[in-house]
Image 1 (cartoon, rainbow over the protein chains, first blue to last red):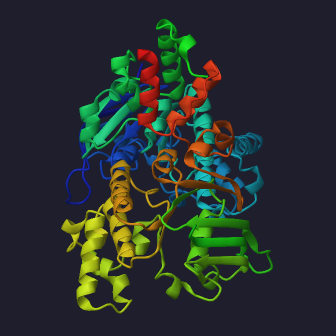
Image 2: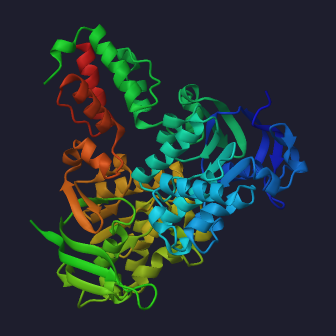
Image 3: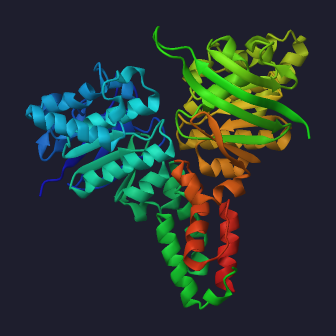
Length: 283
Length: 287
C-alpha cells in the first residue's frame, strides 16, 4: 500500500537564506490524522506547501500516492490534496459564499446537481447557510476562515492539509470544525493539520510531527510524542494541561500519558476503585 | 470600592458598510464596573463585541468610528463623550492582536519612547520610563533592534512596553497572543505576570484561553451577542462547565475534569489550576 504522503530527504530554502527544511523524511499513511507542531519559523507552512506541489523540494522528493510532485502540476495535485491556507484571504475570491464553496467542485467535473448538493452540504456543515448569497470578503475573519475550510471540505479530497485552521476561531467554532474533520477522517480521508493548539494535537491526531528549525525532531504516535518531555522542551512546546497533570500523578499510580480529559477521568476512577477509596470521596 | 471603569447602558452600532443599509448594532446594553487594580477577563465567541468594547474604553468608539452611541463610558473619572482618544490614551493603553499594525519606529527604544515623548516629559524621566518599561517586559537586550525584525512574541512585548511607558491607569489587552506561537505566548504572559507582581495597573484582558483566564483574572465577564451573559470569578464561571461550553468558551481542562469526576462520583470538586487538581486528586489516592 503506497503511503498517501511521503517526504524523502527533502531540503528546501527560500532565495539565498538558511534552509527552511533540512533532510525531512516521513510518511503519512492513508487514513492517518497527523498534527504538525512547532514554533513560528520552524518550517511548518513550508512543509505543508510541499504536500500539494505549491513548493517543490530543492533536494529530495515528495510523493503523493507514489507520484513525484515534481512531475505534476498544482491543479492536478489539487484533485487529491485539498489545501486550506493559514490566511483565508489568500484563498477567497468569489462574489458570493455559495460560489466560493462551489468553485473547486466545478473543476472536478461534477454535474450541476452534484455541485449544488455538495456545496450546500458543506455550507450546512459549517453553519454558513445564512451567508450563501453574501460576499465572503465582507464577512468577519472567523466566518471567512470557515468559508475557506468549507470550500475545500466540499471537494472531499483524499488528503486534506489545513494550516492553523483554528486561528481566529473561538473554541466553539473550533470544536465544530474538528467534528467536521473527524467525520471526513472516519470516512477514510487523510488529514494533516498544522496547529499551535496542543489540545487539538492531543485530542484528535493519531500521530504528531514536531518541527524545529526545519528539522523533524520526532514523528510518531501521539501518546509517545507527548511523553518525550526533553524533546518538547527543546522545541519550546508543552503538552496539554491534562497530560501534564497525569505526568505529575505518576507517583500516585497514573500512567502519565492521558491525552484527553475523558482518558484521565477513566484511568483515575479505576485507580480510586482499586484503592477502595470510593467511600472516602468528599461529597 | 474604587471603580476605575464604569460602563453604563452602553449601546453602540457601527455606521453601515454600504449606504442605504442599516447600522450594525454590536453592543446592546453593557453595564460593567472594574475596580482599580483588578484584572478583568472578557470572554466570548467571535463577533460578541469584545474588541468594540475595548475601543469604547479609550474613545476610539465613537470618536473615530462614528456610529450611534448611547449610554456612558467613564475611565478614571473621564467620560469618553467629552474626551477623545488623544486624551483618553494617557489613561487607557490598548495592546491589540496584530503586532505589526502597532509598531512603526526604527528601533525598539524609539518605539517605547514614542508615547511618553508625546506627554512632554523631561528627558531624564523619559529615559527612566523607557528603561523601566523595557525591563518590565524583559526586552532590554533588544533596545537597539528594529522592531519589524523581531519574532511575533518579541514584537508584542515591544507593543506592551510602549504602552506601559505611558503608565496608563488601565491596560487593555485585546487577545494579544492570538497570533503568536506557543513560545511567544509564554513570553508575553511571563511579562504580564512580572508586571502584575510589580505594579497596581488595572488590567482588562480579552482572552479566549481558559487556562490564562484562570491564572490571571480576578473576575470574568462573558459577552455574547453584544450583551453580558455571565459574570463571576473564574472559579464561579468555570464550575458551570456545561453552560460555559455551550457558549463555545474554552475552559481549563482541569475544570472539565472536576465536572466529569463530579458527574461520575457525585463529588463537589472545582479545579482552577493544575496545582489544585494535583493536590486534591493525589490526596484522595493516598488516603
